[in-house]
Every structure is written in C-alpha cells, then in structure tokens.
Image 1 (cartoon, rainbow, N blue to C red):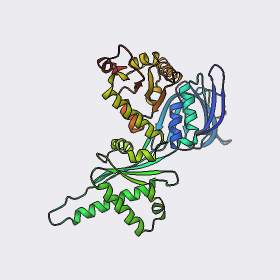
Image 2 (cartoon, helix red, strand yellow):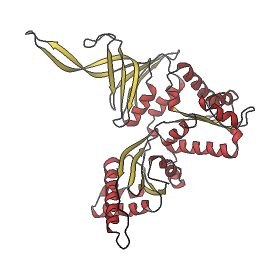
Image 3 (cartoon, helix red, strand yellow):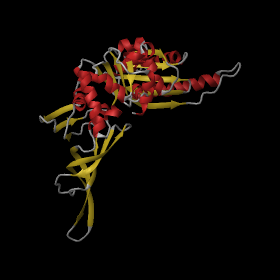
Image 4 (cartoon, rainbow, N blue to C red):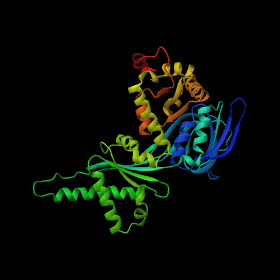
Length: 384
C-alpha cells in the first residue's frame, strides 16, 4: 500500500490518501472503510444527454465522487472492494444524495475520511504500508484426486485453484488405469502451479499431503520440468519443500505451516507468527489453564489487571458496526500495548483466523493468574 497523504487532527478526525497495489492491500482497505466514513475516488457513471434534435443518448463518463459510506462488499476472487453510499459533494453528473457504488481496485487512488481514526486503524495502515510485510508463501495441499493451490499472504489465504480428478482404483495385476489417472491429476496440479505462482515474489512453495502423495508429485514435478526444460521451475527448485498434512483440504494448510522445517524458512512472516501465537495459546490452555482466557468479559477483566502478555483478536471483531462494541475492543488493544503486551490481529480469511473465530474471536495468554476466572466461566462467555 502506498501512503500518498496523511492529514489527521488532534481530535483524531481527518483523512488519508492511499493507493492499494495488490490484492492484499484491498483486504486492508476492506478493514479500514466503515459505514459512516467519507470515501472519495474516481468512478464511471452512465449519463444521459439530449441532442438538439431531441434524441436521447447515453454515455459513460469518468468523474470524481465523494460518498458517505453505507455498505461495503469485498470480492476475494477479483480482489476488489465495492462501496455503496450517497453522494455528498456537488457533481455535474451525479445529484446530491444520489446512490452510487465506488469500485476500489489495485492502483486506484482513494481518499478516506473518518471522524475518528483509532489506534487499530492507524496500526493497520502502518502494516499495509510496510514493504517488509509482503513475504509471500505458496502452498499445494493435496491428496490423491484433490488439490488446492493457495497463496498465503500475511493477512489472508487465497485459493487460486482447486483440482479434483476421479482416479480409477488399482486392479489386481493391472494398475495402468490408476497410474494414468494419477499422472493426469499431477499434470493438472503442475499447470496450476505454473499459472498461479509468481516465483519472483514467493519465497517458499509448500507441498503438503498425507502419505507419499507429496513425494510422488515432487518426483513428477522435476521429471516434467527437466523434460520440458522449464527454466522457471528448475531455477526455483530450492524454494520447494515437502511436509505432512492430514488431507488435501484447505484447513490442513495450518498443519503444514506449523511444520518446523517450514517455520524456519518463514520466520519473518506474519502468517507464521499468527499460527505460533495460536499454538502457544492452546498449549497454555492445556498445561496452565488459569493463564489462558477467551471471550470478551474475561479479556476485559485480564486487560484491566494488565495481565495480558499476548492478545489474539480477529479482524472480523474489529469490523463491528456497533460503535460502542468497537470502542471496548480498541480500549483493550490499547491497554495491552501500554502494559508492554503483544497484540496479534488475525485475518478472518486466514486459516488461523477462522480457528480463532470459532473460539469467540478474542483470546489472551496471561503473564500471571487473575483471581476469579475459571474454566466454567470461560465456556459460558462464548456468547459475547
């Protein structure tokens, strides 16, 4: 994300001009834009005009519009943001108060104005505009007949291709049909890798599966790369790593990212840090349950006692349309930071964020035990 201009007043109101540069920046924009904000960007508008002869024609004109945001929709496939609202500035083509949908996409500048830029918003802008945050990972999670080719960005997991193939079973004394089916499946996965993975950006490609499927595919991959003299694959062979996963479904990606050999290569990425934090939380919950809590009421109590060492929270919670609820969450985030704790904001489009979301969306690892919090209380707090 490119920060063009920043103008924030002492009362935290103001506007920021940004240029998203890729799909992940669009996800950051989705987490920044909220109903009640003012958004300004270029757009196309269909305009009707009447000629001197009385005939009516229509044309599409590009114009600059400012809308009061009412609804936001994120298209994860196209990596675009559709923001609906009413026009709030005079425009020769659009009446005041008329509805319009602004389509934000990579490399299209926009100006976002808020009545209050809180610390969570500003932290997200700092992360989005930090070039060191873009250490990307690709992964192929597979089992016989099923594969998902994913891009693991720091804030989200994108499934770029899903390959499903019916593979005939092995028959006694005749495995030729089975072998042909496997080869056809492997070739489809190989083509998806070539089509969807940009090796100039990706620093590691994980191949994960149960059993020996990953090893068989790995051998097939390099045999085909040598046969076809695919220089891109051959030159990036060192980026490929085979690890175990329980299945070929997307949720098994979490297991692959937790593998020590993968973690050592991706030590600096946000995705690995999130998964490690969630893993540490579950370990604490298992071995020292009094030093782990989840649910808003318990997190507020622990935060007030400056007891939270690591706060885990999903961006879905922080997108709350309830202003009072969001203020409670921002207050907790600020308290944890002020007391020297670490805050991990999990993306709801990442496997680790999905898992945290099933656990109320907010959890904490404590420095010390806070009196009055028990397991039974934790479980009853899930409704928060």
